[in-house]
Picture 1 (spheres, rainbow, N blue to C red):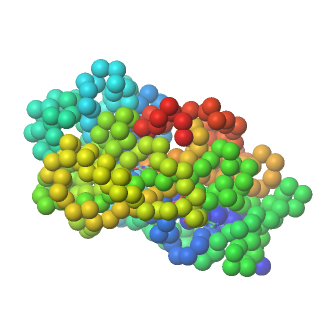
Picture 2 (cartoon, rainbow, N blue to C red):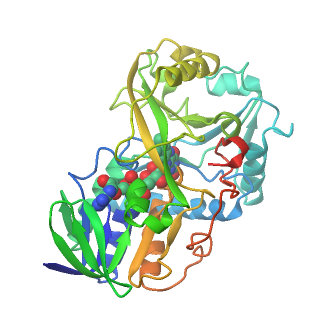
Picture 3 (cartoon, rainbow, N blue to C red):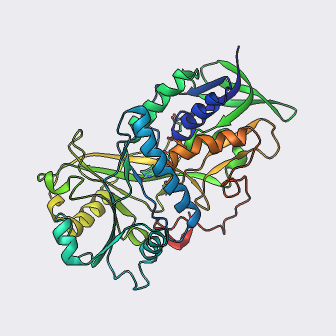
Length: 399
Ligand SMILES: Cc1cc2nc3c(=O)[nH]c(=O)nc-3n(C[C@H](O)[C@H](O)[C@H](O)COP(=O)(O)OP(=O)(O)OC[C@H]3O[C@@H](n4cnc5c(N)ncnc54)[C@H](O)[C@@H]3O)c2cc1C
């Protein structure tokens, strides 16, 4: 039987960043994942994920995102690849920013100014001039921040996985963990559906939506929700290129809509919705996007980006958030099983923090705290817990 210091369960962004960091700290690390990596169903496997400092009035996420962006830039240099694209971030507002209905945008803007960022507040005439694809009749104001953009998530995963292997991580593909072995409340290792056993002193579960399946004590606090993603093929690609069409949110905390500039490789503009989503079984749930959702997307596009109104819809996907009830990540040790840790609960906004996730998880595995550990601790949440990530459009703030 193979024996490791630490076994990481799951090769999405939470798992691979932890494996890299633990290997750097000289542990013998094994990583297990079903099928091949990057896994086609993983949330982390995607062409783009938004990287933004805009977090409303939440100063802790602001600080994390600010730091993360510095590290994304370093990753681009270290790996010699464009994992992070700094195309800017544009918050579109339907109502004036001071109207009281744009509090996410208002507080994000204030926080950026407070920290000395040169952010621009644009009236419709400027929106029209600078970003011609956007219908300036729909959006009365916009805040443009040149810092921010998107990460090529799949490229980031494959790059980090290759780096993990170079650092000596043993990556076992085709391994689906179906039990965590313990002995008098101490971790001994794991077993897989493929009838393999792996021994380890410490096990870190980073299995995305499957995390509460493997650690059932988390079920009251964590669940998976499905969210539609759309790829449209525009005619006028120039209008939607990064210079003219940055990563945007469209009154996001009241609608959920956001999207990305034209991607040359795929020939598409990607749109998605950051909202409640629908609860879904990660194993058996239907991942198809419904006609009603397509209809809703079409109506949003028609009033926001007329040039995309008739663009062919070339791909849809339902991607799973690993939601915690309060919207914060979950990176901590199990309260009673020694050697068992969890790094998960991305809640639809975890990928941008990729450069910080590994060190946070590794500190926890080592029994240390870190600057942000209190927020991501093992905590008791109830049905009255509210979801506090301010960008997300959540009805009654309940997931
Ligand atoms: C539609 C959508 C849009 C998003 N947009 C953004 C964004 O713009 N910006 C942002 O910052 N974040 C965004 N996110 C969130 C971000 O993608 C997630 O927080 C992050 O990718 C979660 O990573 P993970 O490693 O926890 O999970 P996953 O990426 O799902 O990885 C989990 C891994 O565990 C493996 N696994 C599952 N079961 C087992 C098992 N039994 N044994 C072993 N391995 C197992 C899976 O195969 C998978 O590889 C978005 C998410 C979605 C769904």
